[in-house]
Length: 369
Image (cartoon, rainbow, N blue to C red; front, side):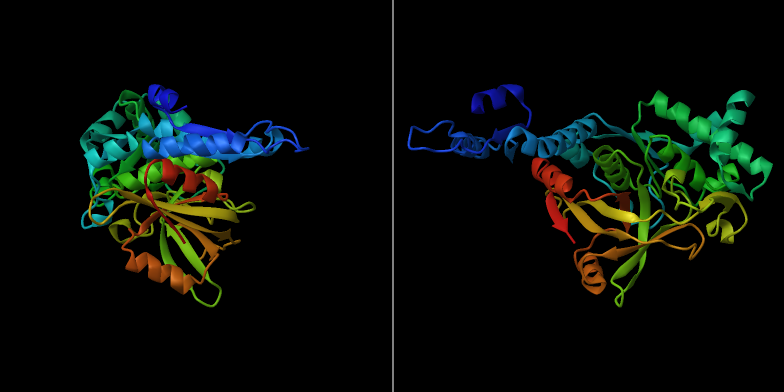
């Protein structure tokens, strides 16, 4: 096996089965011992490997999980993130190391200018714009002007064209301060539409946020939510995750109808569309952040698990209240003391097992809260 692992250049899954019933004769399989022997050799050579133990029926779910993780890693190895306009002013949390990203994950970054995007909107055919209007309106209550919808539609088409041109798998977008001035509308809901269409988009020029979204999308097979943790409650051990209107419509709480409104913050608030406002659906959630280690020697992976609660429209944008599995005050203290960035990515489902595996295979420091 060690020689084969070297030739393949891929992670190896070691599968052992329980020893058959023993009735005084010679050993029948010695399966676990063989894996123990090969695992030592792979460990010594620093070759990535995983282990599953059980009869075929018992091992099948864990094998499926491990294959899913390996597939997600392969996706990152060939992924390309479009960085539109750089990071926003003062957000050092959105800084990234391009070569370290390439070395650790195999993910490339393509720099795209705001000028190219805006100029491209001027060439969008009327038929494409009309189709995009229907897509971005979807089933929403629309409280923005027709002119804003048309501009948003052209922007959506332009993003799709650039996604194809640069062969992108995700975006990181400098969504303020100049975007609304250059183009006349806020970009939030258009970013949510892109995420909803299978191309995750992180706000505020956060490349590692986009990487986190892409990783979770492939692990969960579901849309993700780029967000801030804006408050926590010690009495109920809950926290409120929120962002200002770029959540994909697929995450809307059942029974609620999304509303397309003017943005609550840009240009002083309530001046320009388009932001999508709705609370997120409830259920088990995983919150993740890929982050650089302080000394620049590698990366770490933050993993928070909890239960998303039925949440009202507590404020403009997209809120979701989450009950944590540990005291909220302790969790908040760990986040601050460990210097994690203020951007997180939330996905529905419990991916704790997958994240432990991916951390091991990519040599990431795993921080579970």
